[in-house]
Length: 215
Image (tube, rainbow, N blue to C red; front, top):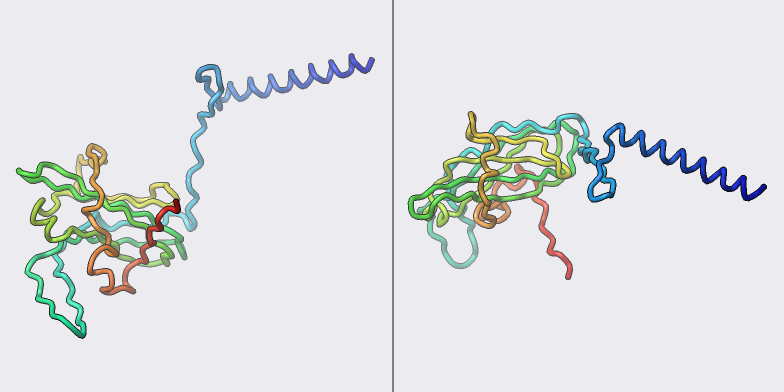
């Protein structure tokens, strides 16, 4: 009698499991790959506090900037005769505070000798209050002399890995043109990698330091 009761419970459990699996398959929650079910439901998107977090005014807008001169007690420094290339992005945030904003800057250059290249700079800003802000990227004067000034720029902004805004200097028909290139890192610089790091320090978002991985 006890054995028959146990068999009945096992059959009931099997029927319930089969019903749940069939319902999931009917709703498209799984697909079969190599005999194993794999979830096809989209990954959850990042939740942004306060709705739309920011508005980008434009893609990085080109400017020329002279190297700042710092006065020291010894030595001398001559005024710079070459220009940095500076890409400036204005943006406005709606949330009271945003923990981190991940910016990816792109600058496309084209030179008869050097060819076509796409430079990329990635920087994370922290503790961004509600209001208007300015972010920027730079090309060293030697890079400008070698490759020329950028012919196109773009910027992508993410929160927790989710894209929340993007802008391109190519207004029509450009699409995500930067995806057609293999970007080069280390040439396009963020403000903290330049002599401008201490200029108008309080007027720019705080850059999150890159902490080396512990080996």
